Image (cartoon, rainbow over all chains, first blue to last red; front, side):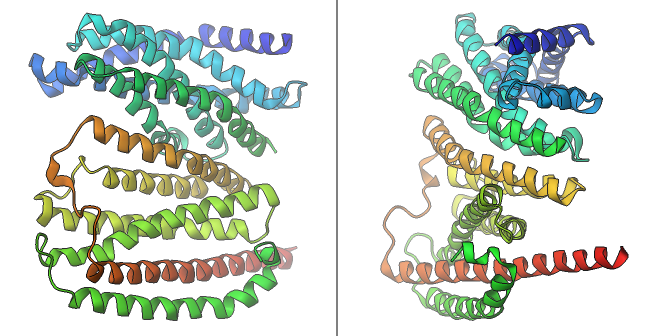
Length: 221
Length: 239
């Protein structure tokens, strides 16, 4: 267990230390939010109607952009080899790497997403639900997206390929999360969306690391 | 039977006659189905456009069948190290993409006269088939972008299995999304009941499409096995 703790501390300090970490993705979220009023027009009824959906698109894109840092650096400098050779099962190491990525990237994004949503016209009362769904959603994004990141390690396709293979898999969490917020704003039942989102996130946490470890072994072997 | 085909020689001697036989069966079924479909009376609501169903619906069925075959072959290759399965998986993906593309194109050609629009996001089946197309494209792109053939095969197999697990979830989520954002009620193309005069040709073309897919799949797998053989021979000659 202490090995996993060391790995977690290493991942966290690397992300915090190298180039801003969480500030980068939060900065991306805010900068991209500015584009929507500028492209769709500033009419409050247009922006307010789609605010929750737009935030979910931004959340998915910000999570996708941060995926490249998940395995690629460690693969290039050989750290992934050492992690794979070490005593920890590679599945657990992959899960810890994803958890660290969520702590430094997904959780700050979840905290910042109500800012973007309210700025676009979402009612303030929806903030707790937005934070909760965004936290669960970004958890699902990183544990599913990590599979794409690990699979594209040896490919020449880069970030575009990674986005192409991961994006279809992100459709269920985007639907469930955005639907829960949409239902709350329109006075409909919002708990089914939240429950389905939580189920998807848990399934991703359970199954994602197995696929990630398989893909990493393939890339290293 | 499947494990017997792990021997490429046995697979090749089986598919030598099976592929052309299936192609003949497919041609006969498609000819009969299309003849019955074209001679059926026009629908009282949809008119002559109902005939698009006989080329559109089987394409969507076959596309799903192709993903099942891709996932099954990937599983056999990843878990049992079946020798021909990986060639079969790589052969199934472009076929699946072609059938999904055919389903999308014929679907939008059908949508224009029926719904007045080429594309309706309100129809969850259209959206699911589009996602299926993206899954096939992602598989092909990943496989093509890795130089080492062994690593490309492994990575593609893992992706195919992840997609296979996700496919029912995606289908469910898109259907669920559709009930939440209720589209206009016109977007119900057929209704649950189909008259036998349409059902029989639809079943015939459905079986014909499946047989055509099987014939093409066997032929493409044969090509892939041959390509690998010639690659091996060239490597041996270069040594």
